[in-house]
Length: 237
Length: 282
Image (cartoon, rainbow over all chains, first blue to last red; front, side):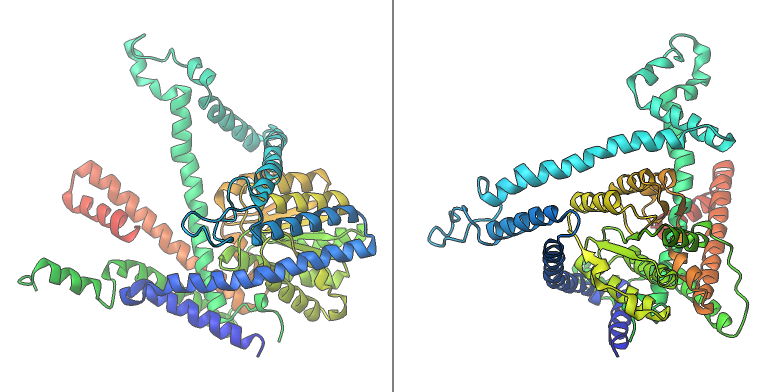
């Protein structure tokens, strides 16, 4: 029963939405389902918040390794929650000046805005910035010319990288019909043109092959889910 | 009909019960789904289903075994998308298979999620896996937990888990974006065996560069069926192959028609190519 009812709901909704794609009068149903999902996700978010608090309170009470981080998390979580939900420091909206909570919670200058602008944004930007270093280390490993395939990859990557820099463009700028009319047959060898060719032909071909495989995989997986052949995501009865 | 005013014709079209401009898509859908269903029926009747070996999936057991020997946990990251995305559903089904192997080896698996609904589904799947392996008592709901919806805050947590707990095997299955390389490089740094799979083509090169095994394209969606070994599910993979044949035939026909249209200047062939590109493929 625990699996059958959700499975029936999933199957019925899925098949109705497939039919809706072809039947104009019920095409708007897919938007309605999207709204239902957002409501479910919002309710589940409360469960997520409770789980987060429960886990970290347990860390603190157990004095588990790194429990100090849990203290920081709980303090930050509660401070942001109270500042956001309580609209602390938010001025009433100009349209409803008599209602204290009528202003937007993201109002500039409010504590919530302050947390977001001066704590959250710099922290996430820092994590994102690490990516630059990881790209360098991954590229170093990927481009080691250990065999013919790796050598081809290295050569192709070198041309594409070079073609996107000013120096790369300048390097082959002499292949110009204005310099010698015979060069009109060789302009395709200019680094920037080679880059465009590699991206438009080889890269696009590979990408489309992968996309076709993914599309077929999605059809097959969706069918398995809708028919109830794969119920592992629903757990056990 | 032609005698009707334009406004009346528009109103009539807008209330049509069937969108005829999508008939080609319906045809492709029926053929593909029909092929999948046909192979499911054949599999049930005992037709042997041979599936080529996928190195990344064959090594799941090795990775879990290594984690068990080293006394370290496994880490399963189901991406950053919610349960309304097919990649996440596929990831949860793979989690069930991986979880069963983990339970059989008596290892530990940690599943931090960035969506509360994914946490609930992952818990159900993992609990089911432990029960299937005959060790329901070893399942701990605390191992599947919610972290945050924020992409880089989630990544920060995962990096912290990797640095502190040093999992011996890391599995990345689901929808990933800019965080793919950050996670895979961090895992590489701690010497974990890493297996990844996603349907985000832009992230595949990053996983290929930093992981030991990467499931590319349809391999990711085939993983659950491959790991289950159930005839029904393997039948769906065979059905996909029919889809590939149809697509391949379409590509060859389209390429030949486009080439001949250019060489001969035939209006009929040009019209056919336009029909393929603007009606069938759009």
